[in-house]
Amino acid sequence: MLHGSQGCTAFGKVFFVRHFREPIPLQTTAMDQVSAVMEANDNVVEGLKTLCEKSAPDLIGVPTTGLVETQGADIRMAVREFRTQYPRFDATPVVAVLTPDFAAAVKALIEDLVPEASAAGTQPGRRPRQVIVLVGSALTPGDLEHLKDLIEAFDLRPLVLPDLSDALDGHLTGDDFSPLTIGGTPVGELSTLGDARATLVVGESMVAAADALHGRTGVPDHRFAHLMGLDAVDALVAILAEIAGRSVPVRLERLERLERQRAQLQDAMLDCHFALGMARLAIAADADLLAAFSQLLAGVGAETVAAVAPASKQGSREVPFILLSLGALQENRGSILGPEFGFLCLAPRRGLDPCYRGCGSPPPAGGAGSRG
Image 1 (cartoon, rainbow, N blue to C red):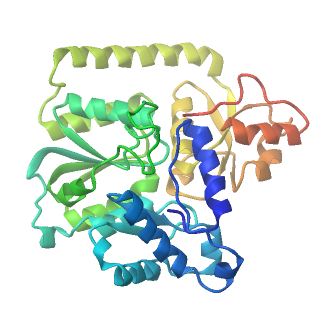
Image 2 (cartoon, rainbow, N blue to C red; image 1 turned 60 degrees about the vertical axis):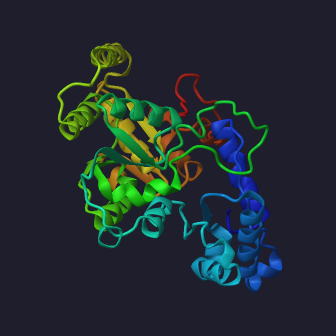
Image 3 (cartoon, rainbow, N blue to C red; image 1 turned 180 degrees about the horizontal axis):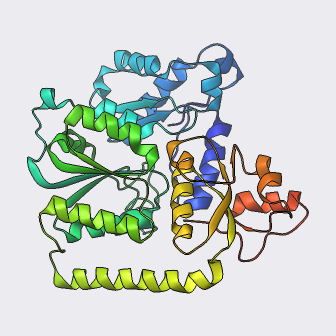
C-alpha cells in the first residue's frame, strides 16, 4: 500500500504493468490536498484496516512516496496508531518504509521481521542446505528463476529476498484476479533465516540489507557485485561448491548442462568481439546494472566512456568512466548523445526515445536496448 495520493500510485502502477506485462495489485492511502497539509495518519490506519478485513494478507508493506516525504510524515507512528486502534490485526505483519528513492525496503523487512539470533535461538548452519539470497532490482524474474535452479543443482535450498521468480514470471493462475501479490518467499520462513548455512548477496545496493541480516543472525555471507560474465558466474559456482561441500552438481546431466552453457557464453563473447571490440559505449542504468553491463562489455573488448546513474552508489563509483553523470537520462542527454562522441547508447527504450527526439534524431535500431 503506497502512502500518497492516488496519482502517485497510478503513476507507479503504469510503469510496473508496462515493464512486467502483468497485473500489479497496488493499494493507496489516497491523500488529498487537505490531508497533505494537515495530517494523513488516519488514511494509513483506515487503509490498513480495509486491507486486513477484505484481503487478509500475510504481509503488508507501506512505502512512502515523494508527496509524503515532502510532507515529512511519520509513517511508523501511523502504523503504531493502527496497532493501538485495531489489536485484532496484530498477527498481520506491517512493514513501513521511508523510501524517498525506493531503496531501503529489503533492509526494513529484515529489521522488522527477522528476529535476533539471541532471542530466536537460531544458529548459523543448523539448516545446512538452506541458503539466503539477497538480490537487487537489477535481476529479472527470469534471472531469479535461473539462479534458484543453479543453487538447487548443488542440493541446496534457496530463500530469495525479494523473490519475483514465481510472482511476475508470466504464468496463468486459476483465479481471474487477485487483490494480493502472488508467490514470493513465505513470511514464516523469515524467522528461520538465522539457521541458514550462508547468504549470497547480489548487487552493491544490497550491502546495507546484508549488513543488517548478518548483524541479526550471524550467518556468513558471500557478496557479488553482479552475476554477469564468466568471472562472476565462475565465482558463484565456486562458492556454491564450497557451501555444498561438493565440487560438482548432484546430477551429472546438470554438470554437463553447466559446462555447455559456459562454452556457449564463450562462443557468444568471441562472436561479439568482432562487432563490439574497441566500441565506445554509453550506458544509462541503475548503479548495479551499470557496473554489470560495463564489466560484461569490457569482456568483449568494448569501452564504456560515458554513463548516467540516478544516484551515486558504490557500484557506479567502482567502474571507470570518462564521463559519469548523476540524475535523469533526459537531463544528461547532451552529455552522452552528442554527435561529437559517436558511440552507441545502452538504456531502457522508453527513456532513450525522448532523448533522441530532443537531440533531433531517431534512436538507432540496434543501439537502444531494454533489459527485462
